[in-house]
Image (cartoon, rainbow, N blue to C red; front, top):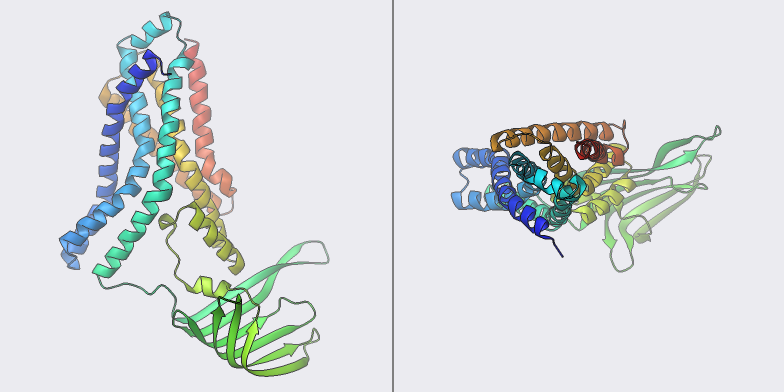
Length: 375
């Protein structure tokens, strides 16, 4: 059951929270989408109706970003006003600790965290992907859902060296001249995944057999090569099934942008990139996945920091509270971009790159809370 104090604080925080959602999301979409849509309407003849639809589909992405900002604004503005009017002092004189007063803001921040996670997983990625498809279709620049020509996909494996270290070497090289979405033509595959032999396959065409979970190759030749580089056997075929990974097919299909995928889709894409062996993309995707987990919990950090700073005795007006909120938000996201970039560069681990700003913000909030409680 919520106490009278909890209900009162909640009622006071809701209006500035809703104001923050409207203000920050409107500002974000104006900078991030409206200018580009206006340019498309003027220069490319994008219909206004399509532009309005794309505008609406882009809105959830900026609402997600507005949730943490609005949490900070609401807690800082509410607690600052109550502190300046001595209402928090009155509560403390009645035996209510600062920890208990701030607990209401933290509890509400957890609720906003859940809402942020829901939007960021179920609504924003799908809406952004639909906005991309709508824009492509309207501008008649719709791209195929697959790469058409010159498909080259290397796969790598770790080989233990004599000194105990592990070196990445080429395991398989897949090349196709063309791909129509189902059938690949002009295939050459170099397979070095086996220790006792290697094979080179050349085929006119090939396709993935969904039923048997294998590749079907047509009209080609397989060259088997011994470890000493001598020919072991030559096999000519009209139709040959080989149990090879379907990595080439998965990578030929166009993947979504990072912002258009939820966590499940990102994890599936990560498995595909692992098979391909592109360390840069793997590291970047791991950082983005961790950031998807970390973003909702910014609400808790901002809720703690806002309520704690607002509880400091003094007179802080709404304009000053808004200015402090903007500075904290700017500093947090700047630091978050820096740590994320360092994680993608391999300086930090993906977990640390995504969560370090949250950890630092949480530590600052707890430190300030301890100081305020002693005053």
